[in-house]
Image 1 (cartoon, one colour):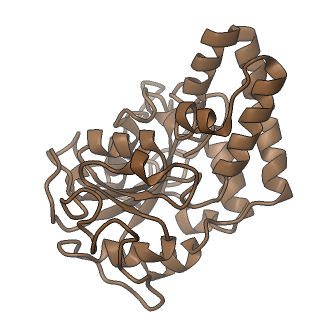
Image 2 (image 1 turned 90 degrees about the vertical axis):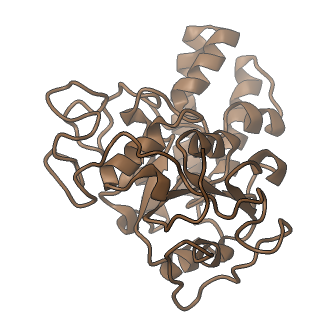
Length: 310
């Protein structure tokens, strides 16, 4: 259940397509690989099947269609080709740097991509240092989006109840994961995924990232907007923060799996590692296996490579 108008304690950003304009690169690479390896796909089919999901999910789909050997080749070539395309030219999502400058709320990143991939894409666009120590990957949880595991994990690591979290997403699996976690969401429709695929309960759909600070500062948010904030108006989705779902920005429900040690806690070897409270704490008992939240242990949903997106 999503309850409206609870003050916001944490803004969870997806990465691909929300922070960095990489979804078009990912879709182009997937279309090319499909044509070469025996599964012709249109961009629309790639968006529907792959965008927002972990690399493990993509591998499973390719393996079911072409066999496990081809799935491994597909994954390896995607990682290489995507990295080369990122190096050739990648920018932040339009309006994103200004939006971040105007948001005073605590923030973090939770992405289907691996930490290695995020270090690359966020580093290339000058955004990594804005989130260092507060970056979470699907490689750290058993199930990727649309399951709620990643967002619940991020909330726990940051020490914030799910009901006080909002998620900024650009993919259907992402907004579905937010709803499953009992979190409000803002669906960014300025990328590849159409607004109709993002709309739903507890989700405000918008298409200009410069609007985000104003949306976050809507009724019940508890947020303030700094200078340079967006217009605060929803684009074509109604007349303000309640647009898109009729519920306002929404609110999470329930108390979640418990609080972590706070955003600055550290006991593992990675930045921001929790003091034994996260699913990977301890001696290899969880998907992080002592590596800290920004090292990939290869055991979670997105292990072995970068996800297609989000």
